[in-house]
Length: 356
Image (cartoon, rainbow, N blue to C red):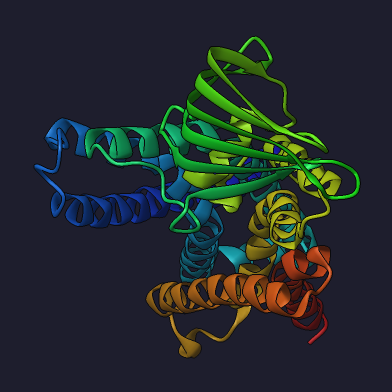
């Protein structure tokens, strides 16, 4: 029995790994072609491009694992069916449900693998990749407005003209209001860096508004305590979908404290928790195809179907994310529906195949 467990899971896992490697190679090649157009900008040389491409690989791994699991599972199931191994296994007393339960351990492995890569590795490598790219091209982090980045922090509104790749700030303008929204102070600083739990500002000019007079101060340096942390600037470098779960939780908490919209980041957080489960759903979805009549197509047709279904799943995932964001749907439903649909179809097909 244990030998059969190992055999089935190994037959499923090997094609998945090979397909994963193939997809990563294709995506990395496209990254290289895209970046080669910027060769020579600043100090952006071949070494920088290769570093960027290599550091982007974990992000691609996180994205393509469910697709690789689906295509690999369809191929493996097609191979087992073509060799009549599934027929022999069923003749030995194994039900389709039992086979599905056995192969779900491969799905569980890739679920844990996807979560580990997406939550522990990708946030670090993606940030480093963007830092290398931006620094080498001697550019700054993209801003949301022409005037720079605007952030609300309690009773203060902060305008940062430039956020540098190391999350240091330049040309900072802090507008502090009282509880009645009367302007109290305007603080301008040339540079800012985060050290020892607070921001160190340099070349500071401060204008203070009192009821009867206006006074100004100039300081070479000053300390600024704020809820804003360098990790929050990572959202400018790394998309919410590639941030860590803890990073998203802290950023959501910060936005809620400042009464700002958090739907996009809550969807990303739920996707972090649910998206890895797609590997189990894909395995269950693929299993019934091995019990179709052989005239409906061999393993090559099943690979083609796997590719189509994988693309469809990714389209659904992106579609529900953006439609839910536009219509303000509950973040959990936006993240869960595509995976739940594939899981439900897989379970239903296994049940029908078992009882036909």
